[in-house]
Length: 189
Image: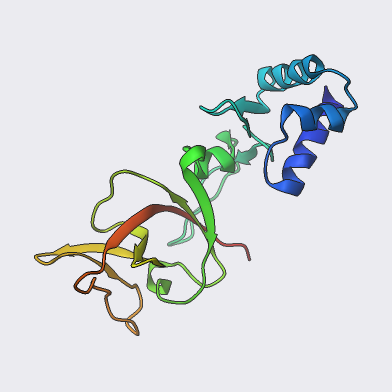
């Protein structure tokens, strides 16, 4: 099964999606669909894969878990002790609702005062509900942007987190539609 796990995860890393049962057959050199189903069952029992609501395979911990060793002071220095608190899977931590989540690469500087810079990745989640104050991905007449969602007596509008830019109010006849809510920012140094 270790060989099967490695091949399935390598397929996922290369294609950014899980293989179908037929692709698993070809990947492993199996001659029957039952063999692929057996491998998937074994991987599911080992916690490597699961099935979504539609029955498609999704990775559970494709990159494993990382040790959570403690906290670090970002204010005044304090004595630090290394202590294993737990392990954490960034996949589960950042995207608990995988079916509704996706990643976007940030272009532009209109949200820099919110700590979101050009080149960062944002994890967003499609939701039915949203509220003013959240950072959202919204469209105004099919043009998409990421801003704070605000509301006043005239209704909803979008506010940048950079003083160089003005708030965006829907004009007469335009519709403002919230597509997703930003749930995390990922930056690699």
